[in-house]
Picture 1 (cartoon, rainbow, N blue to C red):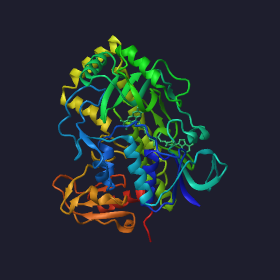
Picture 2: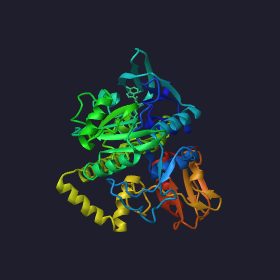
Picture 3: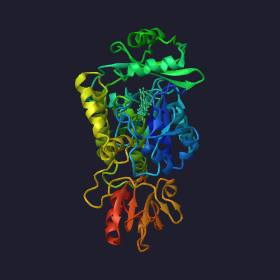
Picture 4: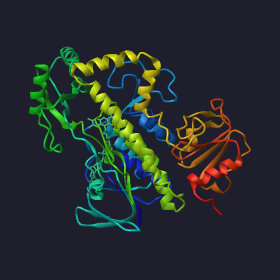
Amino acid sequence: MIDVIVAGGGPTGMMLAGELRLHGVHVLVLEKEAEPARYVRSLGLHVRSIEVMDQRGLLERFLAHGKKYPVGGFFAGITKPSPDRLDTTHPYVLGIPQTTTDRLLAEHAAEVGAGIRRGCELVGLSQDGHGVTVELADGTQLRSRYLVGCDGGRSTVRKLLGVDFPGEPARVETLLGEMELTEDPAALAAIVAEVRKTQLRFGAGPLGDGVYRVVVPAEGVAEDRTVPPTLEEFKQQLRAFAGTDFGVHSPRWLSRFGDATRLAERYRVDRVLLAGDAAHIHPPMGGQGLNLGIQDAFNLGWKLAAEVGGWAPEGLLDSYHTERHPVAADVLDNTRAQGELMSTEPGPRSVRRLLSELMDFEEVNRYLIEKIIAIGVRYDFGGGHELLGRRMRDVELKRGRLYELMHGGRGLLLDQTGRLSVAGWAERVDHVVDVSEELDLPAALLRPDGHVAWVGEDQQDLLSQLPRWFGAAAG
Ligand SMILES: Cc1cc2nc3c(=O)[nH]c(=O)nc-3n(C[C@H](O)[C@H](O)[C@H](O)COP(=O)(O)OP(=O)(O)OC[C@H]3O[C@@H](n4cnc5c(N)ncnc54)[C@H](O)[C@@H]3O)c2cc1C
């Protein structure tokens, strides 16, 4: 039997498949579309996702295709310098089109042995105490021990489970596409700058080779968003907002997106889980959705692998919901706030001016940017050391960088005392005796996702925490 079926081969599904394979889990990704999407939604990776790639040895391939930008200005597009002293070795946004991110994650999943079937749409599911039966559009049935719905905002898995998806429907829609145009570049830039004084959902930026990414508010909300807009709709809306259609022609692709904001009530129903857009949707302000999905997968992968491997402690798989649901709720909230701040109404524009002034205070700027780049996420592991529940940043050790030691996706005891032991957990937890000038603590236990599970120097105390995350000792 297959261990885990992942429905949906977008960034969340492929990231998850790669994580599961690190632990030898037999995983099959089912992707509805026969060919990868051509249209580009996400434009980049934020700090925590960049760190995640670094922790798995994947960052080099992303850097080779991306371009580094400052992180300042990502909150509601309010232009500010990057905050000083961000607590990371990667204080930048990596500009990289989603089509490339999707491809790199799919290549990695395939390299590490995930099965990937394109042109396979999940249309039915049922589960019992032993596994899940999945039905495909062609009538085929497949059986697995677990199923994860990474099948996007209109998730079939979520609907079949009957999981509620409360929130707000789309109130406005935006047209987005790549096309050529005949307008003179200087005149174009001047018109765009003028329109953006009162309409922030408007833009036409060059991508090279004469192609532009064009964004313009749609007229109303489409009945069926799966139907792409026409070039004529773009022309009409450009004329309405800019007084000219810039001579747009030869579209590469055309799409539309809305501002619906919704969060699944539960991320798990017995043997079926939800991750990425299947669990949460929100407008693209700040560029967070893909990053959130990748980080969901990073949280879920090792826990589900532990469950499949038979060593998961009680409650570990449920902690996926407990930890990630509040993180998504916070992202939804910040996008709601950004949405208000981008409104053209006089009240919100005044609030935007006020917030812009406040962001001149370094602390405020850093606080808001850290929300977007997700390095401030703290899971509730109970009280204790300030690092407990947070991800540990990369640090230099005598033998190299900490993140280089985490490529295998195992737990890690970073022991600066040299007096500790992982005892019967050596199969699941690496013991690294080393020191770092950047770390003012005796020892820390890191989960496979890099979050700090324990800080201390007492062996008995450590032994009391290891089973909480890594199950019973072997032997
Ligand atoms: C205009 C726009 C700009 C954005 N910009 C950013 C950004 O800058 N940064 C950022 O982080 N995020 C951004 N996002 C959000 C980002 O694109 C999504 O959050 C991300 O793609 C979610 O990944 P996913 O894998 O969860 O879902 P998806 O990418 O939607 O992938 C789901 C996959 O499941 C497949 N599928 C669906 N149903 C089935 C089924 N029944 N059976 C099998 N397969 C199925 C689909 O074909 C698809 O391949 C943007 C979104 C939009 C619309």
